[in-house]
Amino acid sequence: YGNTLPVFIGDEDSATSSQYIRLDPQGSQLMDYMVTSEMREFTINVSYVFLGANMKKTALDHILRFVSRTEALIHDNMIMTLSDGSKALNCSIQSTELSPNADEGIYVATMDWNCNHVGNIG
Image 1: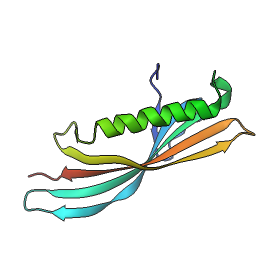
Image 2 (image 1 turned 30 degrees about the vertical axis):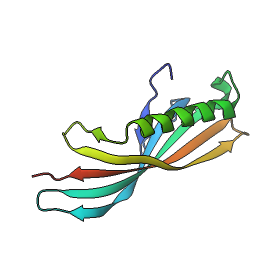
Image 3 (image 1 turned 180 degrees about the vertical axis):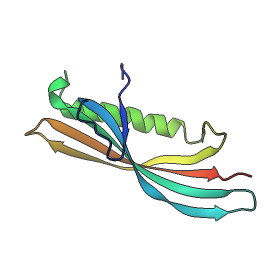
Image 4 (image 1 turned 135 degrees about the horizontal axis):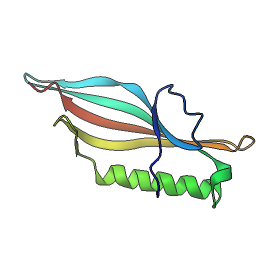
């Protein structure tokens, strides 16, 4: 991608950036409750927002390149060890939606990202 993009969570103000990633946690569901841990399925909407005026290629080319690279990254890392030592398993992108607002030159690609997390290990 060249440069690091700012990441915002939920309703954080992002008006200062022409490109950014927004993470909107959608919730979790208990999948398995064990004696020493529990497994939950988490869903997070990952949105990539950018202003079309900053692109050298067409907006669609840029979005397709971003989405395909992100999907490949998730596919190649279906199991992740998090900073607290817990594991995220079965990571996948369930769907991708493009919401262009060409009049304002703003484009949003939203991916529904799911994973199972084994936590509360004690």
